[in-house]
Structures are given as structure tokens and as C-alpha cells.
Length: 188
Length: 169
Image 1 (cartoon, rainbow over the protein chains, first blue to last red):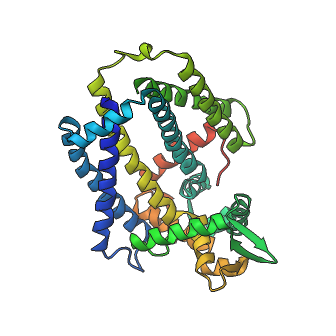
Image 2: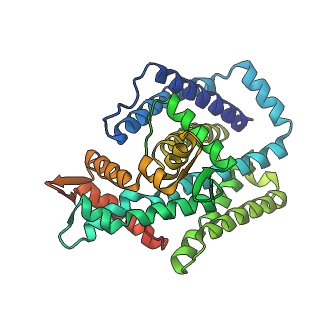
């Protein structure tokens, strides 16, 4: 019963943090056209972390003094304890795997780590931007990216043109909405 | 609920065993291997859930402390998920390419047109600029060299990539 309550409270508090972060973005200027990409991303990370820490205080209060509706909802879920426990175990397994896969993907696909390694392995330990672009095979990477997106079913090649598949369109629309709401600009 | 919680965590640890397989053997289809480990873990979870009685997990840990830790973990997991979602929407090369196609008048672009709208050349320049701001690189005239933070960053990624036998992106 206590665990069910903690799940309900965590969902409520995280949803509150999300709304708070979106609300704060209404009053922000967002990324300026000439500024480096990383700065706004860093600001977004700090503001959202502040929202999550603030709502963690709410989490603590609700955890030790839960309102009646949380107790009632937890009671209803607890009456299906076995299926609820099974589903929660699956959910927990999913989010742990997901967290790991984010790190895995980040390490596997990181361009910056590859560039750092390239500079470190260069004879003099330093490279110019032109040397980096030559060594990194920029055009080859572009083709690989397009190939990967086509294999993943995000884009379709038709008589020399690339268009988004339905999955790609949905994904692109989601990205455009997110960028518009958080005022991120084109990014990349 | 305690049973689901413990078995979920246990099966995740089983899932992580694929990292030692990646280290020992040269697995070419890594994505397929990860997917296989994932579904294998889920299958084992279901079997264990059906086989192990609930009583085994009673009194395994103080209920209130366990519930608090569980809730706090979930709360910060949602943050972790959200911040990575923003990062992928903002920084990913493929996301940017798809949004450029979507924004084009006919919703389709030739490879050359796409490269004019967003090039890998531009991405590399952005990455280098960001790494200077983050203190990973030092700009020395026209050249870049590693700062101590960059050396550490590079060493961590290199070791993990070597351990898992990952190709360089």
C-alpha cells in the first residue's frame, strides 16, 4: 500500500514539475540566434532541475501527510495487488533498461567523444577545425545518418528526394512543437 | 508490490549481463543482442513472478523507507527522462534533418538541399564551440587541444567504448 502511494505521489509531483517548467518558459526569451547551442540547453537543464527539486518538497509533504484521495486511490489499486505488482515490476524493469539505454546510446553515438579522441590521438595532440572535418569524414557521416534514418523507417527515398514517413512526420512534428514551446530554435 | 519491485530490479541486473558478452565476444548485431537481452529479461521476470510466492518478499526491508526510496527514484527518473527528451529533440542530427524536411515547402528534399539547410560541417563546428564552452577543449590559435576535463571525458568514453567494443560514431 505504501509503495502504491509513493508511485501516485511521484507521478503527481513530476507532472506538477513539468507544468511548472512549461509555465516558466512562457516568460523566457529562449535561445538567441547568435549564441552557442549548449548555453540554452544548460539553462533548460537547470530550470527543470529546480522545478523537480521544488516539487520533491511537495513529494515529501504528500508522502508523510497524504490527502484522502491518494489513500482512496491507493486502496483501489491495492485491491488488485497481484496484477498491480506484476505491472509495476514490468514498468520498473522498463524504466531501468530505458535509463541504461539512454547512457548506452549517448556513449555509442557521441560525436564530441569521437572528436576528443581524434584530437588526443593526433601526433601533436592538437588539430585545426579543417583537419578535424577531414579526419571525421563529414560527407560519409551524412550519408550514414540518412541510411540509418531510412533503415529505421523515419524517412523514405523517392526518385532522389527524401521525405518523412508517417513515423518520421510524427517525430518531426513532436520535435517542432517541443522546440517552439521551449523556444529552442533550430538546434542541432 | 514489493515482489514486483525486487524482481524488476533483479531482472534488470540480469539484462546488464549482455555488457560482459559484448566485452568477451565480437557481437556484430549489437542492437539485436540488446533487444534479445531485453525480452529475455522480461520473460525471466514473468516466470519468476509466477514461481516465487509473495511471502518471500515480506519483511525484506522496512516498508516506509522502501516506499520513500521508490517514490523518490521515480520522481527523479521522470526528470532524467524529460531532460534527455529535450536533449534529443534539440541536439540530435537525425531530429534536425527530419524537421528540415518537414519545414520544406513540399515536405521533401534532395540530399544536397538537405545538406544546404543543415550540414554535418555545421554540426562539427557547433560541437567544437560547445566543447570549448564546457571546458573540454582549449582553442590555441586555429587549433584545438584537450583541456584536463576533455582528457577525462575522452578517457571515460574511450574505456566504455573499448569495453563494449563499440565502433566510433
